[in-house]
Length: 363
Picture 1 (cartoon, rainbow, N blue to C red):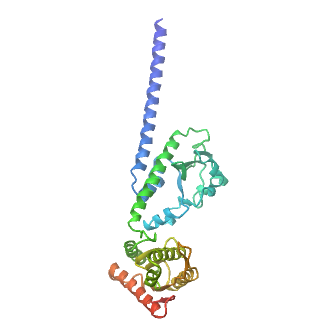
Picture 2 (picture 1 turned 90 degrees about the vertical axis):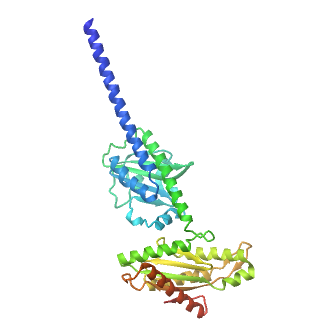
Picture 3 (picture 1 turned 60 degrees about the horizontal axis):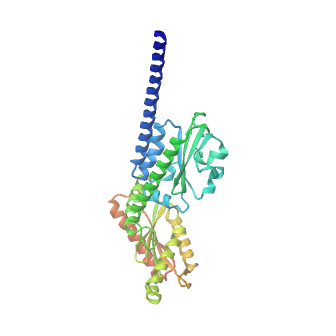
């Protein structure tokens, strides 16, 4: 009888030890999950969030690769990144798509995490070259307010790391936290961007373009690339306001801004400088190439009348002055160099107007 009690006591102690070990393991997992949550939630800027996703989290979780794919049909997020001087070429793990159909076969399965062995046809878009394909993957859909905004993709060299039958509670929770954080930092950056945006035309304002010019001149000095400034003015704009009203003038401003924007690259900068004047900064562009861009802008506006809200069409033309940064390594204060560059473009614009308008003149 005594031996039976001793055996029962030993069995109970072993069960208790197992329960304590399991409780400690669960506590460690919970603490690790909470640490991941805090890492993402504490990121208050896009740059910090990207660093957390691609470096801090990837290292902490023992992952070989993490990519983030965001749906950006109107290039809004990418324009914000340009404004933040975050170059996409430096972030091969940050991907963008225009529409859900670009997810391919994954599109129909993104209601929940997709786990399994890596397959090029299924997962290749989430781990494009030059990324080394992982052995197993977990594709986590990022969903906000019932709408897919992108996906976070985890890759491991361990083929058994993300088995299809693996429990997904943690990664579903992780996906919900990341989705909230992505939405929050995008909205935060948009609010910052609003302060640098012209509310009438939707393009950048003078404050932004002046700040951006200082940054680009400094960068051109360090990296030795060309920088060209384009000064654009709508011809006879006062007559438009006087003849058919300020509402029509506003529509012309919006239409002209849209036409200019259509001819620019994502890396270029467009700003309303004041009244009917716009400034364009063409990054890594020689003056000869800038003149070609200016001609495309001029023709695009001259050959496509602005459609007014009342249904009327209005012919509009612009005059353009182009000036290149004379030498990226020129000395002097950046502010003085920026003022001189704008002044030279403005002088070229004046000559274009004196020569009859609706033309491009280079400094």
